[in-house]
Structure formats: C-alpha cells, structure tokens
Image 1 (spheres, rainbow, N blue to C red):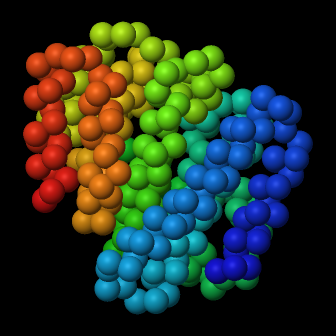
Image 2 (cartoon, rainbow, N blue to C red):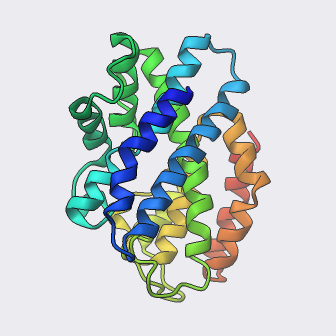
Length: 253
C-alpha cells in the first residue's frame, strides 16, 4: 500500500505546486481528505470478514476515489459536479490516462475503477457484481464520514473564502428548501441539485444517516457528534427538531 500512496502523492503534487495562493488550500483539502477516507476504509474493513484481497481493493479505491477532483478543479475552478463534470467518472478516466494503477491485476483494477466511477452516484445500480458493490459501499461510507468532518468547520461562522468547499452556497438564516427537508423526513438521501442555501447542505449531510451501509459508519456519525452539531446550526423549529429522533434511531440500528 505504501507504493500506492506514493503514486497518489506524486500525481497530486503538481496540482498543489502549480496552484495559486487562493487555490492551494482547496487542493490540499482534497489531498488530506483522500488519505482520511483511506483511513476510514481501513476501519470499516477491520469490522468486516472480508478476504484480504477484497479489503485491499476497497482501500485502494478509497485512496484514489477523488482523483477526478484535481483535473476538475484545474479545468473548472469548482468541486460542484453540476457546474462542471462528474468527478467520479473523470477520476476513473484520469487513472487510466496516467496509468496510475496499471501494475495491479486487471480484475482488481477494474473493480477499483468501477467503485471510483460509482462512488458519487445518488444510488448504486442493481446489476453490479457483489464485489464491486461492497467496495463501492465501503468507499461511499468512508467518504461521507470524512466529508461531514471537513464541512462542519466551514459551516461554522461562515466567512467569505469558503465558497469552494461549500459549493457556492450561502447562509440564509431561517431558510430551508422544502424538497430537501421532505427527503430527510421521508428517510431518504437529499439531492445536491436541490440545495439552495447552507441549511439545505446541513440537511443533506444529516440525510446521509439513511445511506450508510456499515455499523462502523453509523456509530462513527454518533461518536463524532455530527447530528448534534448540524442540528444546532439549523433553524430552531419543530419541523427540524422532529428529524432528530428518526435519524438517531437509524444510526443506532
């Protein structure tokens, strides 16, 4: 795994070096995020009875899952897929273009590429192999747990300069979008394209409680206090308060 970390670091280094002072923190954020998602995937795999090769495949996919973010940001100046491109698909194409994983067995590499291409889908297709499904679910959970960790500080005392991590959304006190709120009420994952303000983003992060696949992930969301922190940043209304109990019930399941 050490040599794969080196490959990832060597791939991302030029993006960091060529970035200007405004861009550099955003690039570094994604590099740090990638390594933290990798660590989360290791923790999930330790709780599962997976063959060693499959666990390793999932962890490599976790490390490289956001490979597409770097060319995406260089080309478009945003991490918002709806205003640029699908970073999951771009990541798989970028790995092939730069031959980053060419030393791996073809079957393993194809599973990793599939997991990377699918990790940011709202829902996984039903026709994929069980091996690909498990790998992708591990990446998705690992990603979500770290994304919330990364975003909460940016959502606290919001200042100018946070536009890229927060996808350009701004603070609109007391406002929530009905479609995003309704998704959480129905125990569904919120949709990025329906967000209109930062409170919508907070609701979307809470809705991920309903899309976590593994007990480690659900426990971690509780352990890190994500629900309480996000709830305190949302409007103080009965509609919001009523979301807490079903979310906690889901996480404790």
